[in-house]
Length: 187
Image (cartoon, rainbow, N blue to C red; front, side, top):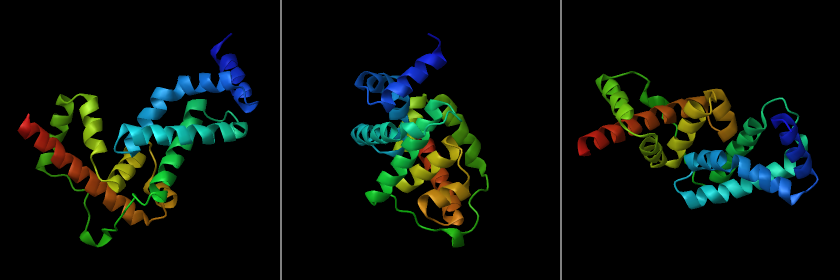
């Protein structure tokens, strides 16, 4: 059976409530979706809770999947929306508009040094540093830099002003850069 037919078999089985097909889909996407959830939470336990809740939503809505994107992309979108909703619900997504503080996207002499530090770190350490960012900063950094959302899309998803998204991203970058430089000094 080719991959497309196997995937369609799993999808059809999940829609019919077949537990074995649900297990197969869960196992197929588990590690990627857990990594996605970890980017939005501060720890693995929260990420696993978020993942479980997200998969419930996937199974409840799989009948709406039309194949316009890959199944993994479709599931990722549900996981991202679930993460945003969970953070909002738990009131952990505190965002403060910094629009009046000026433009933060100017490069400075420490930018190149921070980029060099990233090159010297393993990916797990970079993810660990990102996970240590405050929830609002981490969420916007993930949505913008990793998921590819525009500031307008982030503003709509989070119910904030576009300028707030931009300022939070800038502050997240500054804080991450500082953490990278601190890591270099302490290494």
